[in-house]
Length: 513
Image (cartoon, rainbow, N blue to C red; front, side, top):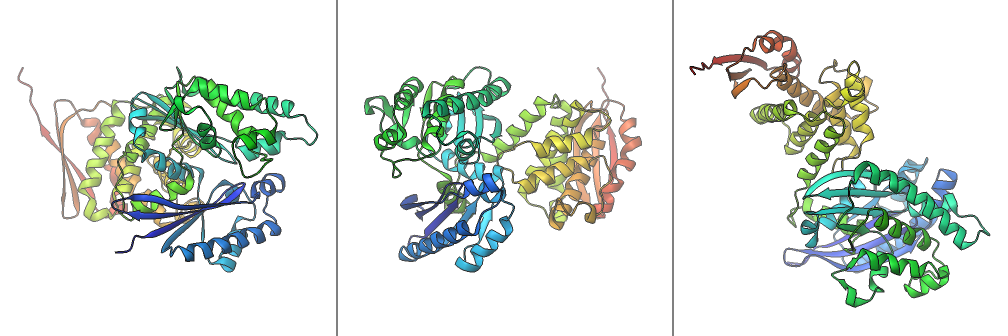
C-alpha cells in the first residue's frame, strides 16, 4: 500500500509555505520537503487595511508553483490555511474567491484560537512535552500579527492569551526609515517588555521552568549556541539570553549571516530576537525548548488525527475544561454548585443521546457552558447572562473554534433568558449551531432546576427516558420543596425543544440516627 502524501500550505503575514509529509502508521508523520516563498501580505493589511491586486497576483503565482511541486510528489491530500493576515483584511472574501478561481485552492481562514490550537497540537505530539508541563511551562507561539502565550502548571493548562504584537506589526508600528538600529531595538524592547510585564503580573505568579517557542528563527538560534550546552534543542535560559545579547551588538546583515538566513537583510530578525529575549527574561524561565515545529506541522497532525491515521497522546479536551475552570475561578464563580451541575447536565445528556442527536463534542461544549454559566455575576448580578456572554466571547479558550465559543456563550445566555427566534441571532450563528444552543440550554435549565438552592440536596439521582417522559428520581434527606415548586416552570422550555416532559419524583430517605 502506497504511503499517503499530504501537503500543508500556510499563508502567513510575510511568507507562503508548503510542507510535504508522508503519513504512515510506522513512521507516523515524516517531513519530506519544505518550501517557503516570501510575500509581505502583512504590510498591505496593516498599512492599508486590504490586500492589493499585485499581492493577489503574486499569491496566485506562488500557489501555482506549489501545485506543480505537489504533483511531482504525487500528493493525494492537501489543506490550505490562512489566519490573521486574511482575517484582518477588508477584502478577505474577494481574495479567497480569486485564489479559488485562479488556482483551484480553497483557503480555510481560521480564527486565532483555531490557528493556535493546530500549532499547539504539533508541540504536544513531541515526547518531552508531557514531562515539561508537569512542573510549569509557557508555550509561546510568535507570528507576524501577534503572539499567543499558553501556560501550564502541574500538568494542567492555566490560561491562554493573545497579544497583538507580532513581528510584522512591530515592524510597521516602530520602524522608521533613517532611524538608528539601536534606537529601533530600544523602542521594541520597551514596548514588548511593558506588554509582557502586564501578562506576567496577571497570570504567572513565580516564573516557569520551561519556555517553549514556536517561531521562525528559533531553530537557527539554538543551532548556533555551543552544542555542549544544548540537548534535544533544550538550552539553559541564561545561555539563550547571553547569545541574543551578543547578536544585538551586530548589524542586521551580520546577524543574518551568522544565522545563515536566506535574506541578508531580513527585516523581522530584530523584532524576533528581542521578543525571544524579553519573553525568557520576564517569565523568569529556567530553560528554553525549541521543538522545531510550526503551523504546517500542526495542519498535518490535525489532518492525520481527524482521519484516524495517528492517535493523540495528549488530553486536549482536558485542556479545554481546565482553561474553562481557571476562567471560572478568575471570576469567582467555580463552586460546588457548578461541580454538581456538571454531573447532572452530562447525566441528562447521556440519557437523552438517542433523542437529541448530538455527539461527544457537543457534550464537551455543554460542560464548558456549565462551568462558565455563573461568571457574569462577578460584574453584575442583575445583568449576569449578558455579562457572561461578553466574558466568554472575549476570552481565548484554546481548542474551541470561534463558532464553538459562540455556541457556549449563547447557551449560557439562554440558560435564563428566553431563546430568541433564529432570525434575531442569524448574524452570530448558523441554523445547525442555533439548534445545538437550544438543546444545550434546555438541558442546562433542567440541571439548574435540580439544584435551585445551590445546596446539592440529593443523595442519589436516577434519570430514565420512558416513552415521552424524562423521569428524574431523586433521593434526599433534605426538604426539596423549592426545587419541586419551580421545576415545572424551569423545565417547560425543555419540553418545547425535545417534545419530552421532565418529571421529578422524590424517593424519601430517612435518617434514623
